[in-house]
Image (cartoon, rainbow, N blue to C red; front, side, top):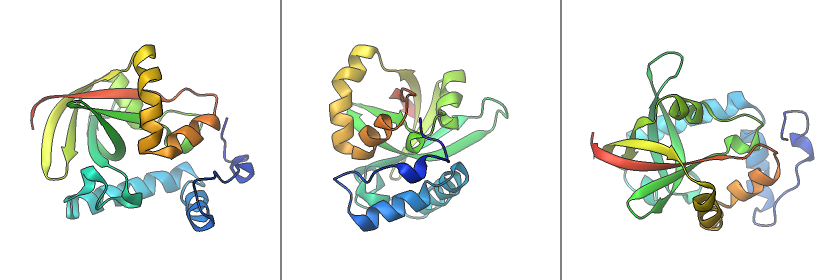
Length: 173
């Protein structure tokens, strides 16, 4: 289980260089930093959405979408960036929260209300989220960690199984 007290003991994965590792450790040192970065990433995405969904203009070069959920406590729209993988017409997202021992808020929001909105570059869609089945997860996981190797690394750091959601577009937004 990854907690603030044992993050210092995490070992650098082979696929990261020292500079990337230092950046990662700094930017994920606390949930507050992760949330702050997410807010800044949303603003950057909205200011220049071109190429984000393919990773060409996204942090780290990973395919990124904006996911808007309805807050389970507030009822207000909440938007967060999420690395994703295409599976046919659907988008697959993983609630890793950098390996912390709790689910990200957006996962809990989708558990309470699966209706959401997705922005891919300039295009916005209404979508419905659902948990992938155990069989789907087993089939998708190798592809997911190929898209974003950190998911595999983070999953090894915690006992919490990451929520994996399938987002299916229901209509243009």
